[in-house]
Length: 424
Image (cartoon, rainbow, N blue to C red; front, side, top):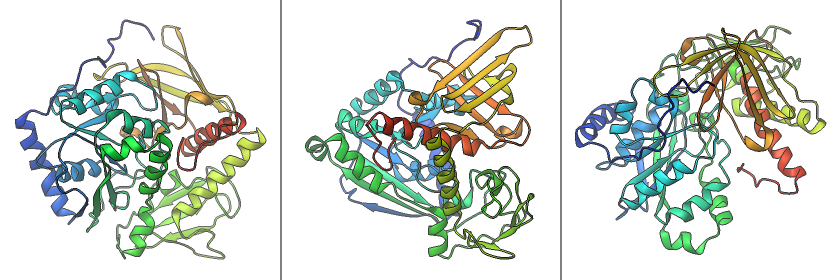
């Protein structure tokens, strides 16, 4: 993109949260946690004080509120994606946030986190790097274990349950007032333990600790959601019919999920389980349906046939935190080689974005982003972020996200260096 657009200053170092904003954050977060009757359990945290690395699973914005309550009377320096800064850069800098463009390798961000640790702060990191699509664990970066060793400070985990059920990523119109929710804050590693462990050993332990399934938690804890629109948007993640196999013709509304191609309908009960109105219930557990879709994508990748086709797209750029800049219309293809985007602006300037398979172990997607154009894939460089909105209905950004991961796994296998389970 033209250099006429100001770039976000990624080099500006983070600061400690202003005392005034600490009080404001606590005033905003404690009531919300109390309203959800969150049960916060701490394990091994006796005597643990900053500096430490705080790792959290990520299902909804409510994760941040629970984290701020859990770390009281301290406030962490959180790594936040650049779109979180739009229109409020001054505020996020004032509370100590560290800006990041998703799924990029940015040494400046590492340097900022090391600075926070050296200054005795809490480094707040959501290593899955996106909200969970269906309330289950997303891949963790292989670099996480080495990063833990690099910081040389205690590693603490905050694992939350119920946040996806309360405010699922596929339907963010309103919260569902789920209560009680749960959170466990646990000391995972001391500096001495990190010193004795290899990065691979740390990674394996982190994958084990990061296992969660919000729908299973809901069922086992008998958490009722009586929202009359609880299935609205469910087709965003369950885009393929298990009865007829057709993609992109699922519709979620009210408490039902229906395939427009074959007519089969499933009812979503108040405990998050699916029941076919007629015939076999192929998947009662939503994450099982989602993983079935992943398996189908994996088969396409292994056969070398995965291809989104040529999609017409609208593209917006986010070079800084001031506003989105319409870039123009163009095309996007996601295939065995990765993402290929070509867009032409109103003045005839042509821009391209290429994200190869080895460069992207996962990608960030949005559903009805800001309730503007619709679903999108955001693709990042160190200097820019493109929000790419496909047109029509013969696509699924969820499938693209699954394919991005499976393409990366397939690439690593073919290189003779397969990813360990749970890592990417």
